[in-house]
Image (tube, rainbow, N blue to C red):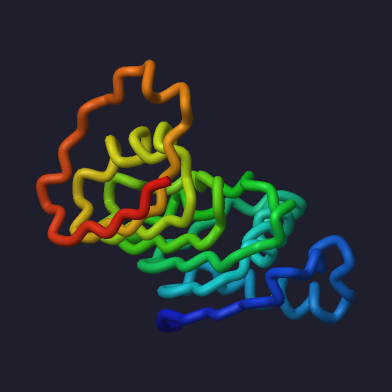
Length: 168
């Protein structure tokens, strides 16, 4: 079987995950079984959370071998950041997240494109130290008061061709 592009979205204002009806859960679980074939994925954070829950409950080790690009869309403000589903995506090159204050566990060293919504500067500096292959970086960063007193780590982005940054 060939690669698969997946788009699973919901209303970001919804807190639907705890109240998923049985038919929707069943449909998502069928789609989740194709995770090894996913090449691109556009997912709501709620779907990512349910994917994580499903894999953990069924003791399935995520193996997104073909996954090259992921976009995670906005979620309700109460959304938790506990996801490591994509940590073993050996082909992942592009990551976009529209979830504020959330650090996913990813294979950062292999990314060539990274787009994040609001992250703390300390989290950003820590992530960027592992992203030496980045060619395009789009980020929104806020600087904590404590950073002024700290010495920020040095890092290099030798392949970077485009940088778009919003700071607060």
